[in-house]
Amino acid sequence: MDSTIFNRRTLLGSGALVGIGALLAACGQQANNEAAATASAVPSETASASASTAASDTASASATPSPRVTRGYSGNSKAPDGEYRKADEYGPAQNVPKPRNEPVQYPETEEGLYRMMKDWVVAHNYAIQTGDCSYAFKYVTEDAEEYEFYLYIQGLYQRGGWAVDGLDSYQPEGPLIYDEAKKMYRMMHRRFWGTVMYVESDGHLIMQANTEHSDDNFYFFFIYSDGYWKIAGSKAKEEM
Image (cartoon, rainbow, N blue to C red; front, top):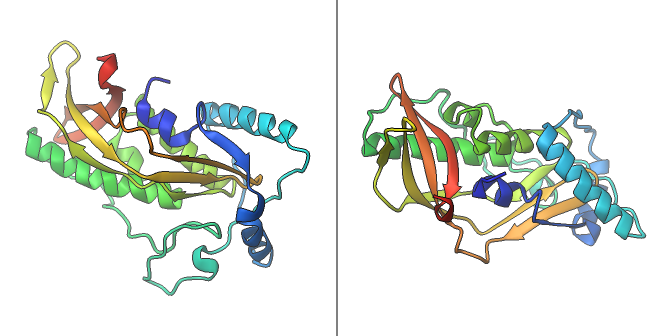
């Protein structure tokens, strides 16, 4: 996988997979008291194969199996309706504001692209916090690495896991350039993020902190069709 976003965000190839241990012990105890059982679903083939391999390696290296974790409520209680509460070791974020129902037609200009990207980031961060990727899927093409990342996030929540932190913001770092040969646009962006932790229901964490900033700048590729912008992929600037 070439995408800097997918490799860093899912951490399936280079991230650290560790026993959940004491960090989620309270979560497991609390959640077991909840009358909840999240339905399992088969994750995407790419994410499942990589995650299964990593989990298997970790399990074989540990003498003590990790406890199974069931989602509870962030903050260890159900938030009042309308009160946003971020994700933590107890469960996913609550009452996350929803994105637009549908993408908006914006002009084929830099300003139009900026406005689309703002809408997409809301849908993107909503997907990370809820596992509902239906909004984010509408802003990317199916062959984009970002689409595969959403398949992973969707599968994570369907398996009973969730994400803590990992929200993104983006800043344009260069002009909008049209590639006549490829029939698509590209623009350099900088991604801002701090830490991310993916909690798996099998009692493992996948986590990383953004301590290396040399790969935070990369190109997004875009297509424009029938009044709509879509993200068609991304690539590190060194690969251009």
